[in-house]
Length: 76
Image (cartoon, rainbow, N blue to C red; front, side, top):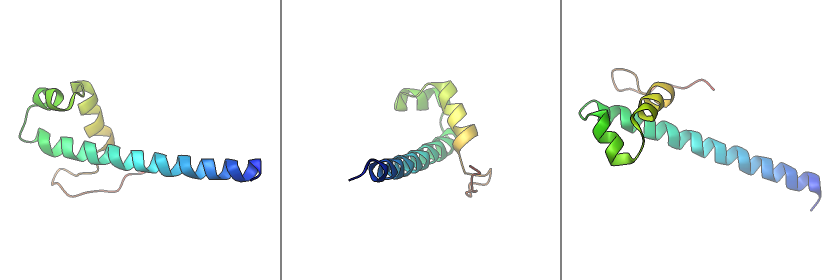
């Protein structure tokens, strides 16, 4: 296998991994947002091991849920 072919495959693998990571981050943010409607963020922090500031950041930056709970698309 040539170096160029190996490079292209590695980049494709990286892009796929980054997309999966983005989707997982959005899923966590959406679940945190829903959970924060009925639970204190401090309790969510204890439950997940994620500090409170990061929870707020995830919700505000990565959640794709609108105020009414429906999902919205996220611009890249």
